[in-house]
Image 1 (cartoon, helix red, strand yellow):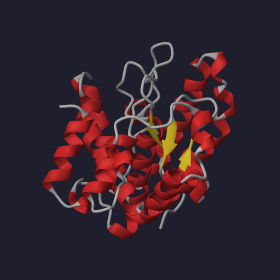
Image 2 (spheres, helix red, strand yellow):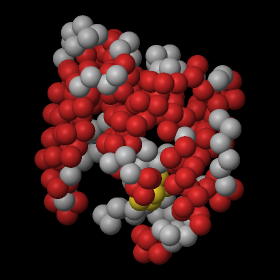
Image 3 (cartoon, helix red, strand yellow):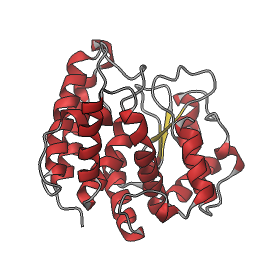
Length: 261
């Protein structure tokens, strides 16, 4: 079963707050969500619907969840269609067009022309009202990702990765780091998400980080994420211009070390 199927099983089987073993209360989910919103869009409502000029997809919500138009080359893991279904299952009134598999705007030009229209205005309103639910979606995605992270690794690496995941998931800052990073840069298991054969997702960061106590884990994860992201940029094709984004990426993962609540 893929990540879509696994998350939909969670949707059907348990209340939102109980869908992961990550210790997120509703208030903590709201705080985590607002931090991620600040990371992704400066906490601004207008940035809840966005299309980067360097990308071939729209970015929606507090986590800039990817939504591809029909026919687009899907290089990165798409997440907005499942988020829309998650919000609908949580009780939010999601318009039918937003539950469609493909983004209705074929390109950035069409998207920008529609920014002031009723559809995108209503979507921004919905997304600004569902911060906690979006954070819980991210937490569920992080939890569902764990078996995928372990699959195919040698036994010793599986044990190391699982232990580090558990240490992180036992503290609020660690939960924030897991939830934010898996949304930010993915699980790290897709063969499409590689430069020169090397990934940059959650799996790679967990294997890179040093060991220590649960209290020390968020800082260790932050440092490992910095290393992994620097390596990604060093290996990336020059035409992608990823050095432009690196300072912001490093600032984002540095927040994992800062007090959250």
